[in-house]
Length: 129
Image 1 (cartoon, rainbow, N blue to C red):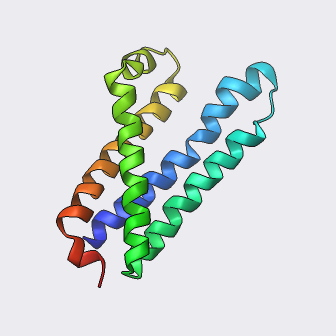
Image 2 (cartoon, one colour):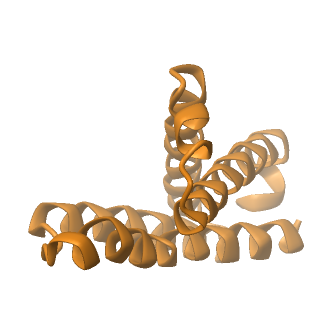
């Protein structure tokens, strides 16, 4: 299960890093728009949410378990919502390789989140004392 957590960590971090070329391609290069403060704050809050939960699970404490589980469920539902309401089809049809790659990373991250949420629930005792 430790390997699953490592994969979860790196794909989630990759998803956050992928937001940089996404922003540059869509907003900075064409419009020279600076990132919004609210967007950066929200992205930062979700990253801290993930890192607190991840670290808590590594330490096998109950609060970390629930923090990470809540993050994973929200992330999985976010990407499921995009698939159900058709954003996935629209995004994959984008001619930009950068955009396709960023969204592919996001959807993989959503799948990994869903799978790890399942593992956390199924094997709860292995993650907390």
